[in-house]
Length: 102
Image 1 (cartoon, one colour):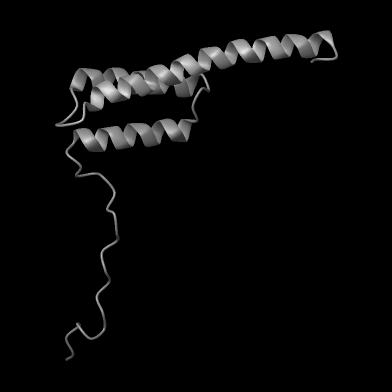
Image 2 (cartoon, rainbow, N blue to C red):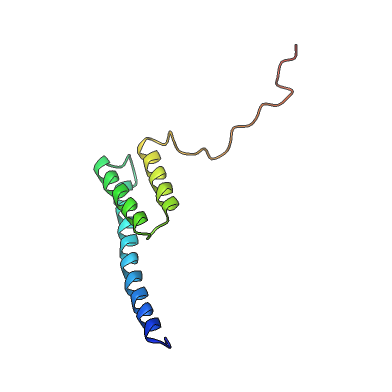
């Protein structure tokens, strides 16, 4: 329970903002599920709409800007066929024994 009028107002503002932000995050998750689909490549129109929604959420401070960039990068990597997806393990470095000696 807040002790001052300003503290009680801040508590009311926090709850209303939390509800609004939660609805935005839920919408982003649902959009991502529908765009990803499960099999095949995502549709281009849905991807553009999702990227726009992610950018808006980052602009408004609902998600962090780096989190938005990461989400968009992963989504675009999936759209492009996984060519830009990060490798699961780095390529092994050549050993000295494998190098030819002159």
